[in-house]
Length: 488
Image 1: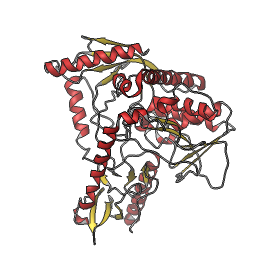
Image 2: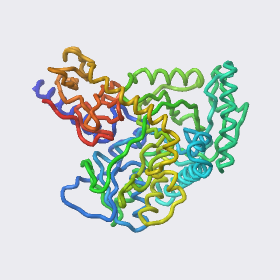
Image 3: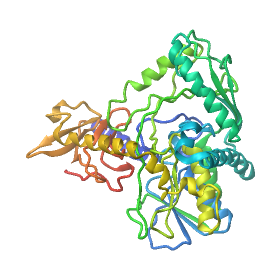
Image 4: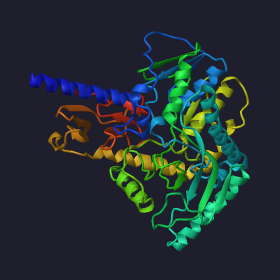
């Protein structure tokens, strides 16, 4: 009986892991599950027969849900397809900020896209912040939406006089341009950020008014719940779209950036969400990043409490800073919802809803040239970065000559590693908590990169273009479309 109970417990644990992987793309959970557990999210069934629709939306995160909402609200018939469970991608692993204070900055955006492009960027993200509040109010979605100020502070302490002065000059320039573009932005030389009571003095702040904060999964779950009750909407989960007759997928470049930005807390019971220490997917050990972030916070916010949640998420960085949203190049009826969020995925996803809906209806949209996947001029201005990124990506193929382990016995329970067998065959090996072994090809099915084990998220990550697979090889995030080939 004891042995049967043990086997039953192991089977239950395995089932729970599979269910968790169906609902999110990493082993860790984001803070959003505190009020919105996976079990509360809308449920849809699998597609088990051929079907037709006027519009097919692939993906159920904030982009897919926003596109579907805008189209359904305008009377179009929509079918949504999701590879796993709804909200199983990056929307549930974001910081929950809605901002027109774009991570790459308007000074840099204007260099790539001109004054008109920078203005379109400001206008579109400003619209997206307001749109979330408007839709939440109209549909009665209690997603804690509120308008708050945001603060972008110098990266350097005042004690580092040279770097601090240079950074402050850049902040002043950014604030002036943002204000000219219609963004509520002002530079404050001596403003103290609420709660920053540590000795590290980094004053020199852009204050952005009219920013937004909300609970992203409650909001998107609310959209999906409303859609579920509409006669012109259907959603099917658990099936991955492998190909589209008319279209194909595109990727941006992954990058590293550094910034310090805050939004105000309402009271002592609010969670403080801290993001940063960005790194390229699969190209270094991420395990020390959480400790680095916590140290940074505790040196500045002395009253910060215990850490309840630690998680990571993917950000795609296009070389010209703007997401790709619009008609896919060379196609007539295939649209790219959003890739290349550049750290502002929530507002990009919301504005994609309006932009795609307008294009489907043949309407002109004031933002379409800025986000067009077929844009040329801004990409040409980034040619040196494109070359650098391609060289950097190609360097990751060096793992074809490397191994993480030489023997399966080297693996601890609940971990993975890549080893070389025979005449150079790369094999990814995962050892379960119960000691069971899973062997699969270590070659990413996208473009043949050798995957790496991510011990934080318990996943296999490709260092070339960022695809992610769960411990057993199931594809979680693209651009790969298929799973790792099983060798068992």
